[in-house]
Image 1 (cartoon, one colour):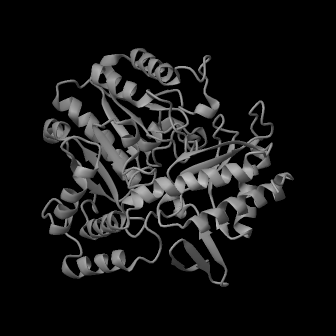
Image 2 (tube, one colour; image 1 turned 90 degrees about the horizontal axis):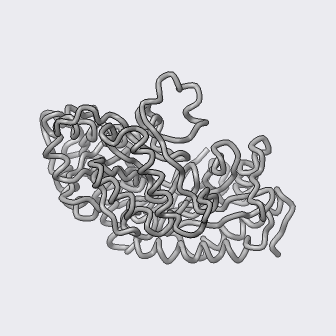
Amino acid sequence: MALSAEGCWITDTEGRRYLDACGGAIVNNVGHGRREVIDAIAAQMARVDYVHAHSFTTEAVERYAARLAPLVPVSDARVFPVSGGSEAIETALKLARAYHLANGEPERDVVISRRGSYHGNTLGALDASGRESLRRGYEPWLGRFSQTDPVNEYRCTNPEHPADCGAWHVRHLEEAIESVGSGRVAAFIAEPIGGATLGATVPPAGYWRGVAEVCRRYGILLIADEVMTGFGRTGRWFGLEHFEVAADVLVSAKGASSGYWPLGLCVASGSVVEIAAPMFGHGYTYSHHPGGAAAGHAVLDIIESEDLVSRAAASGAHLLAGLGERLGSSPFVGDIRGAGLLVAVEFVAERESRTPFPRVERVAERVRAELIRRGVIGYLVTGCADGIDGDALAFGPPLTITLAELDLVSDALAEAIGSVLGFSSN
């Protein structure tokens, strides 16, 4: 049981300390115990604790939206705050539908996503997700949407890999659109860099530019799921910035409040909002909460004042180098990948063939347990090879983590892999 937390460390009720190398669920970007955020929430709650968005706006929400909008890779951005990532995804999906209805195209009712994706656990978000293990049992309520290939350079199915993989994936997206019927597709949704299900997979050159061009050509809205990759996590404010592409709609959460308040965001371009507005009847009880806006604003203060975006880029390079040095010769480590402080290590039974361990062996769980015994917490990734098999651990610590603490992560992981799989890099 957790008793206290400060910086990158969590202390349990027995007095043992753990390095939070995954920020909970890749959530905490600014570190634990930040009084600036806690005090900002308390001050706001003392002024206005709650009003419903149908009746009032608040200075906190207006101020936060105005500050956030210029940072997001969305033209003339309009901000719709909600209570978390799944709510934000549902908002984006409904906004896409409202946009096409208002635009006189009611036949556009299909969203295309990628297999091996994760967009949330509410029904609409789950239907857009490509994780079979999470969908299992809910199939009678799913199936409205369509999917295209996952983008995973380590396990790319392009016959000419690594040549022209970006264009190859874009052609497959276009084929998926044509298969559904180009006039029926409302939106394409994807994570700029793969997160919870594939583990920090960075797409090939040209992929996102090609996707954006295809979406424009077919009149399809491009929805970027930046729930995990937003707010400096990948070494840019938002993951799409690595690829110099703008979204029509961008969804974020997690790092937006760093876990200090349940906060999600659906951010859409002004042109989309202005067309969709007459048809977009939507909201939640806790939409536009002033406490969430206060938390988000304080988090932005910390990220900017401590230059955490640039720091994440440099720290991520250090972590990748350290993991490569400690694990690069292991026959059980297939890939070390990521961007900024979103990094993953994928384990394999046989390195040359990239054969994953059978899921029944629960390798990722066993390595993670050994890692925790050494006082470091990683994020579990399973099914990353084919939806069933494939084991990895992801790391997304607070962006405030020190280089010495990152070295502890590399050392502890090498020891944990050695303990479980019988290999030491020493």
